[in-house]
Amino acid sequence: MNHFKMKSTRILTITALIALAAFTSCKKNYTCTCTTVVSITSTTETHNIDNASLNAATNTCNNYQDQANKTLPGGTTCHL
Picture 1 (tube, one colour):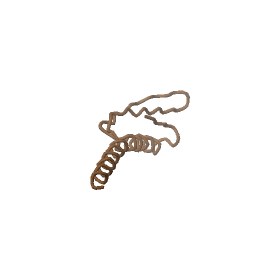
Picture 2: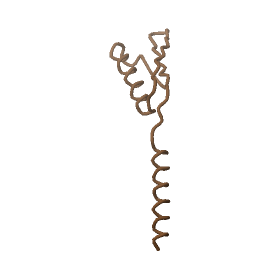
Picture 3: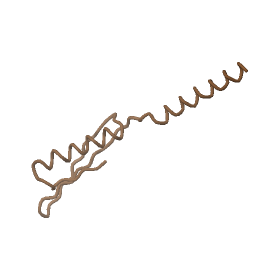
């Protein structure tokens, strides 16, 4: 019976480690592209976001958009 418990514990531990690795966010480099349209003129600007999780990069890109739109409301859209 002890052998069975040890084997079950080992399998459970390995499964937990695999699940943890699967849900850990990998950090990568992202590029946020922002396009500003004023009248009929459009300009595009890129921002590098290095060593970030997807969630952090998305938040940073959204912040670029928010900052640009403080100057010209609704004129800038940004995306990864």
